[in-house]
Length: 639
Image (cartoon, rainbow, N blue to C red; front, side):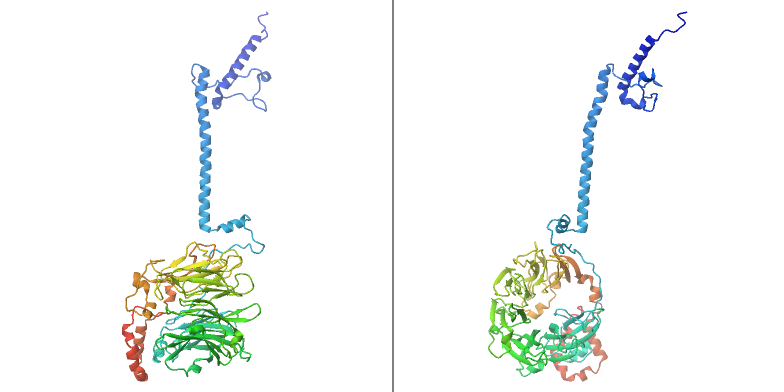
């Protein structure tokens, strides 16, 4: 039967084709619902075309979402808003993410910079900016690590001398030479004061001590009858391989001390005993010079001031003394008869000639002074000495020595002076012409400039300190600044101010690399009133000695006085890195404190024969000094 055989399936094929087309249309419509589609996968490449595999039907019908009657509008209503939302949301998300990352990096950078405190100059070095020649591109030091090596406290002693270094025990380590006083200074101090307070025979009012540089132990100690103000340990008088120390002080004190054992080599006082009793000779400072008298040993030059019993200065003189035996070779009156309170200095000219620089001036308001020069050879003869005056000041002249350093690169040291009254001056060492000057208004100073390389040029800069107030000893505050060695202008944006008016100068530490030096300086403040500039005045009738020794912090603010030492260079902000503070070292500074009144009473109680032993001085002591026992402040410990 023709019916029993299936005809060619063209209609079926046509139906299948339509179904395939419909399925293809459904797939396009359901492209957003691909998760609901399940197809037969065949072949290694995935879906096959109809012409390859015949009719392929879905394993299960598509799950279609409800749509609007008009399929065209349904597609537009469901797909287009979602696409617009994606287009708007994606850039916003990317922008917020980028902004968050940027803010995070900025915050991280601020934290790192604040923590490590890197200066801009160091960062510029990383990027090759402001490059320096090979060997000079050295990163600066911006902090210290501090450790106490040793300490040694001296109760009842005071010091106004600079520390000197001298290897006195041949161990290869520099030892410390320190001059001191005792605070018990005066012309007629009874001898038993030494026994009572120091447990020794006179003298006991001053001295010099050598401390072992390795551990701080005393190597030797030499006592003097007056406080020591200056020390020079640069010459070996005894030729034993250890430099001997030239010591100057009040009341004509001028000693040469054996550097090896502290014994006395010679002293000047006895040679001047022929002077009138009412005149007191004060040798404030001295230093070694080349041999003048031809005995093969260096000689000594010293400044001194003659005073009457009232303490009023009369005249200043320049002394030339034999270094070998201590004989006076010559005494020359200072220019204008002015006082002189610091050591003469030596300046060598290009032709090899040595010039002596001498400063004159005084604390009296009417004092005249200045800086003067005289060739060393002129002091060897007997002719009148031709002083050349380099600079003068009607406001007390010079109270501290200048700094000798070449700032104009001509091969000769120049002269940088801090005049007592307000002005710092730089003079050419060859011509003595002024290079620059800078004035601190209404101020005074007792300290010398401190040289060091603060900025990046090759000219030394100078730390200076001036006190501000009406007049010595009344100072409301002091200020520290650093002056450019080229121009004399301040390098700090603002001076460092302390509220007491400390009179100490600074020190410098030479560090490899241009502009990397450190300056060390002291400040003194009243606790809780740091940097105060409030004016004050003392009670009427108080004398200058009482004013100079007054505890101004207790009187002004009922607070304590705190001394601090800072280190500063151009890579750290002022005031700098804290090195030392007395309020943090009380356990060291007061570990051997004693109350003088209590100690005196204990001694008298344990020595009933005291007055019989010192009976010749009893009346004088009771009338002049004895009252001090009853008026002494028992709350002030000796240190």
